[in-house]
Amino acid sequence: MQDIQTGKALTATWLDRGIALATLTRGDEMNTLTLDLVRELSALLDRLAGESTRALIITGSGRAFCCGAHLRYFAGPEATVTDPFSARDGYLAQIAQTYDRLEEMPFPTIAAVNGFALGGGFELALSCDLRVFAKSVKVGLPETRIGAVAGAGGVQKLIRHVGRSKALEWILTGAHVDADEAARFGLAVDVVAAEQVVPRALELARVLRRLGPRAVAQSKRSIYVAEDVDLRSARRFGIEALSMLVGGDEWMEGMQAFLDKRPPAFDRW
Image 1 (tube, rainbow, N blue to C red):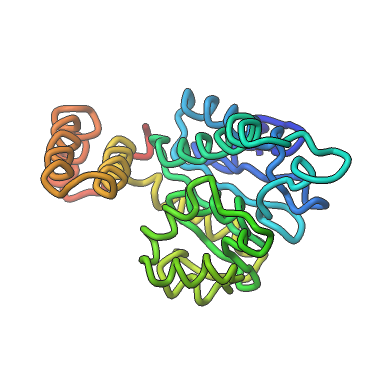
Image 2: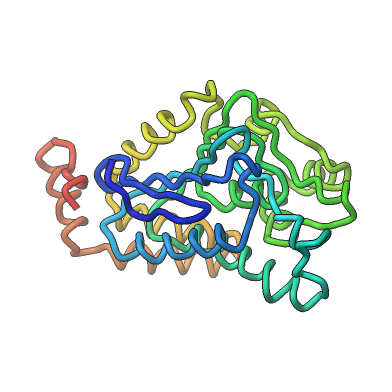
């Protein structure tokens, strides 16, 4: 594997051609959301946006995928987030903006959830396009247990995934939801043994690599836009998304492959 980036809280490698793997490396501290981690993830997205990236897999180390906020910033001798403005501008907004960028990337993002994904860690998983869960994982937004609220988009995104009633149940009770229940509500593509989480995510990424990269990017954008606008506006965006593909190299390869009765060679891009 070829290294892309090595930092204090995250390392990234090319796992396969066009497929990147980002690993959160502070497993001894449950991969909490330090500012180092947030900045390194943002820098990685900058780097991958300029590469021929076809998919990004994110996973954790140790017992956790990511267990959310780095609470030492808020309490104890290391506290630096001590007022509403430093909390919002110096910490929470940076997390939320980085998570939103995962949805905006032109390539698919896959969370290979190897362990606990709680609070901001679950928000990270929800911000990825697809998720693979280990059988042993627990996920949730348990902030009510400590007098807080999930503030980096998790509330809004969970509602869109599981509906208002189930989101109310899980969020208000601070539930730790097991992998099978989460999968029943469509949160995971698959639930596998812990050692198979990254291989299963890689298998999924290789399937995506065989598809038209611009078509995947436009489909992804169309889906997220459709969540946020009225039906007519979403339909208009869909026409534009398709029109932008017409006549391009990828489009021509797909049309010719159909006529030739052969698989298109999209993986060459």
